[in-house]
Image (cartoon, rainbow, N blue to C red):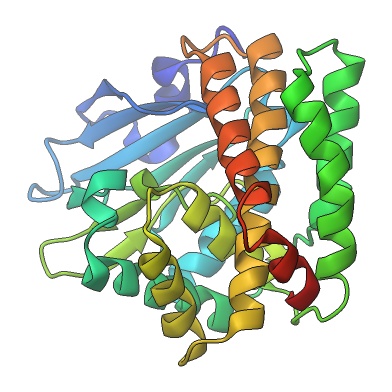
Amino acid sequence: MAHFGPDEAIARIADWKDKDVRWEELGGGITNHNYIVWVNGGPDNPGGGKYVLRVPGQGTDMFIDREVERDCMVQADKVGVGPRVAYQIDPEGALVIDFVEGELMHPETMAGHPERIKQAVETTKIFHDGAVFKNEIKIFEMLRRYTKTAREINAPMPAELESLLLEMENIEKATAVNPPADVACHNDLLSENFIIDAAGKMWIIDWEYGGMTDPYFDLGDFVMEHPFSREEERLIIATYCGEMNEGRFGRMMLYKSVSAVWWGVWAMIQHTVSKIDFDYMEWGMERMARAQRVVDDPDYRTWLANA
């Protein structure tokens, strides 16, 4: 994988043979190496196009099945929320995806903007209701699997993380009492995975962690990734459910903590194996702090009782 880059990927796409293909690095990824690719100068020219090329980062096969990712992306495209997969390059698992022109969201352009938050939730509900993924995810089994991997490779396991992993047992018991049906979930709803195009349509990208699981985990992950006020967090449930539902709100907030712990363990593994220039340790410790704030919330026991 270390020697598989954009030039090697482009050379493997037969449709681009004898075409003018140019690329440049697209920053921001902490899992993959991403590139913008122009073919024949772009989509306004004959035979042209603009794409994102995603080359998997080293060690990501611990987390990601690229066939699962492609299936999720195809299904997201079918229901109208994800861009089209143009090519898949195997066995490396690289993907070429239609480039979506638009405004990339950030935490500060989502939080504090109620209409944008509602649009994100409504877009999420489209694939929750309409898509079916092949992959099935059991949240707490997955967390145990990640934790086992982290210990096997001697990844750092800070005391804060060990304490939170024990608390996850209480959340697992609480969320097992009144579970909704599993739906097609994205499971990585950070702001930068939302794009709003010129027509105002919201798109969702990066489906590599997608799978059928509890919809309130998806919402909890969305909440975890943004500095929302409590009012904005409640708006998410009111929008998703059509009215305020305290039990489902509590479930989302519990999963906010679970999501943060999941990504905290993920970060410790990445800190150990990834070659991407990124401070996974600091990023992971921040996720653990977000999880702890949920556990320390005065309403935490109520959420456990009513989830």
